Length: 324
Ligand code: NDP
Image 1: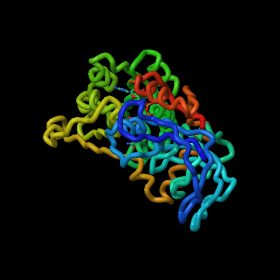
Image 2: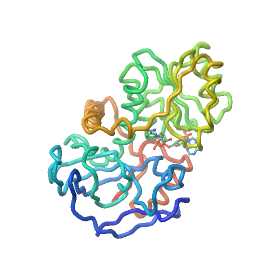
Image 3: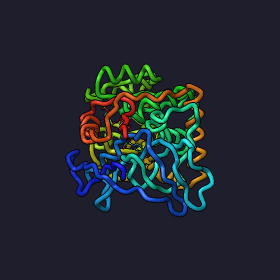
Image 4: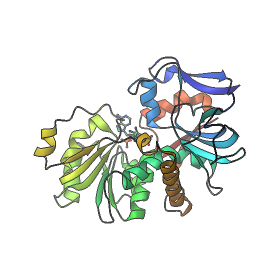
């Protein structure tokens, strides 16, 4: 039996329950993995509260690292005893061990600790696809990145610096702005000041940025549109402050022939070979020292509700780990 976090109903952090569940044997295309560390992500909040509805009851969590215990028929890229890490569906990583599809599980290089693996897969693969597979970006381009001191944010700041991309961050406090700048943001604006779109304009000599990467959603959407140069791209990839309102195509015309996309990591990693290639790119960034994975919060698995409360209250920076 293994401890697993399960929800019976959508709702607040109080719906998170710990169950003792049998873990079972892997079937075709599956592995059994024993987790050393589990990652906490904002998507877990959306799945818990029902913004992204799930069939209930359901286990929760999309990211972890650990040791492969058994592999099912047809799995050739992993074997028992291998160190591994993943960002993957279906949810169920908040657990001591689990059986899961193998395709998105990646061999974890010796030089990367389990905790680091659990703190970087979902967030780091997201940064990989945002910077390399969503819109052509090159050295010298300017990106506005919201929530720049968060889990995805601090990886994005360092990634941009390593690619010569100018990243202007936003964050909710002076301390968070300082942290983003320490990690490579050229500038960081406290967007609790309502004038932040004007500050972005001023920082780009009135031109606007090439790309906005917006995971904050409802609270920032209109401002993000106002920060773009003509034919610039708004990448809306999350909704930490609430759902983005419907977009009227005419708005994109009137604001300068803007482009708009709403990607998700799970499209980009759906294919096994692509997922492994993206993971190798991420591992290279981390092993080279270009990107350091910062873990600022750790919670025992049975304090998962407290971990969710802390993330939703905007009290975290960098990545958060659950200890199974
Ligand atoms: P973060 O660590 O970035 O936490 C979210 C941050 O959002 C907060 O710390 C806070 O920073 C900011 N925020 C602004 N408004 C609110 C609000 N009303 N409530 C809560 N937080 C708010 O989380 P993650 O690194 O896990 O994820 C970052 C974002 O990226 C999330 O929106 C997530 O859903 C999205 N994402 C999307 C993916 C995709 O493929 N589409 C994949 C991975 C993540 P501050 O105080 O500085 O404002």
